[in-house]
Image 1: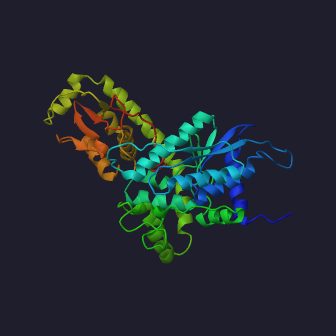
Image 2 (image 1 turned 30 degrees about the vertical axis):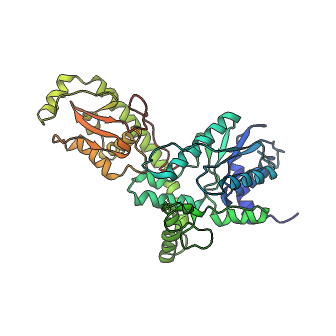
Length: 399
C-alpha cells in the first residue's frame, strides 16, 4: 500500500473528527477561497466524506460534500481566483460547488473593508448552508491563525475572552484544522497536486513578487492588515527570542481559556438578564431618590435604549460585573474587537463610581448613561430597531 504523506494523514484525521456524527447523505460544505488552507481542507473532506464512521467493525457510510466560494471583488482578478478555486473543488469530486459574490454594504465601516468583507463572507456561508440544507460548513483556519488571533486580542486589550481565540465549533461552522500548521496545509496541496493561491494582503510589502505594497492591500491605497504584520513580523520575533513553539503555546492557551470563558460568559448573561428584569420593575420614586442626590435628572428610558438595574450589577463580583458590562456593550452592537478595557471602565464607573458624570461613547456610535438607578445603553447603528441586539455570550473576537 502506498505511503500517505504525513501532512495528508494529519489533515484527514482532523476532518474525520469534524464529520463524525453526520448521517448518510447529509451535506457538508467547505468554505474555499483557493488558498492553501481551504484547498487542503477540500481535499481531505473529499476523501473522508466517503467513509464517515468507518472502523474495524463498520464499513461506515458516505456523506455528500460540496463547497462554497465567496468572491468579494475587492482585488483585480478575484473572479479568476474564485473560478479556479471552484474548478479545483469540482475536480476533487465536491458537489455542489457554489460561487457567491455578495455586495459589500455602502458607506464607511468603522472596522474597515476587511471586517465588512468578513461579515459578508460569513453571511454568504450561512445563506449557502440554508439554501442547500447543509448540516455543517467547514472553515480552514489553522493553528497559525489561532495564534495570531490570540496576539491581536491581547494587543487590543479585549480581556480574557480574547485568549479563547476562535472556537472549533459555532453553530453550523467547524474548524477542523486548528491543530495543523500552515506549512502542513501547503504540504497537503503539494502532495495532492493542488495549485493554491496566495492572497497578496497576507504578504508583507517587502515579501517579494505579488506582495501587497506598503500603502495597502492589492495596491489600492489601503493598508497592510494587522494580522499580516503579526504573521510576518511579530511571531517570527517571538520565536527568535523565546524559542520555537510560541504559536503552539498560544493555541494551547486558547483551548484552555475557552471553557473558562464560556462559563463566565454564561454567568454574565444571567446577570444581565436579572439586571434587565429588575430595571423593568424599579419604581421611579426609589430610583429618583437614589440618583437625584447626585445631580442626575430623574429621567427614564428614551426610545431605543435598554435599561439595566444598577443595584443588581453593583452587588455582583467585580470580575463578573465587568464581564457582564462588556457583554452588554456587545449586545448593543459594539464590535468585540473595538470594545476595550477603557470602554468597560467607563461603564463600570456608572455602576460603582457614580458622581453625576455625563454619557459615555462606545464603539460604533453606541452610548451609555445613568439615570434613575438604571444604566441605559443606546444601541449602535447596527443594532435592532428597538435598540438592542440581544444578550448572548460572544463566541469569539473574530469569526
